[in-house]
Length: 214
Image (cartoon, rainbow, N blue to C red):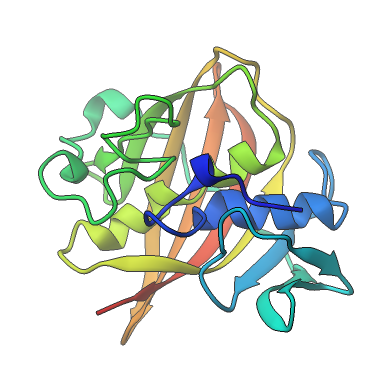
């Protein structure tokens, strides 16, 4: 498999959520199936031949990621009205403005722009693209969680994500993505994220660890 260049996070590497979702899909994960955890060992390379086998993703001799089953349940984040969210911090300062998921300079991206909500965490509205698939939902579950740490002024990248997608949303649907921080320790920030379809139906939940970078 390859990560197409359009699915970048930082300019030269794959968006963590989309890449992890693509790895999980290549390993057999499907909507409605059990949760899968993906640990990124190095930034996912773009346009590079990758082998997904035996719970690992490799580019030649380099270990890119590891996959595992998830113990226990993933706790969903309660839905929040995105109309109550403040302004997206990424409009003012963004470490990766061309990110496929949350980059304001990507008119062809998912354009998920979360803002802080009064109860804590972040929320955003997400209009589902026509080509939605499992990695797309993993991507939607990714960046909003990261912004619970990014908006504090430090730059973080995804280190690990465990996600369960119950169903794919309908193309064109107006969904809600919500995220909340759960813990932090040194360079690590832990977050939960959920996606709700119109009418308040939960369709995906994730638990992630983000790592601060210099």
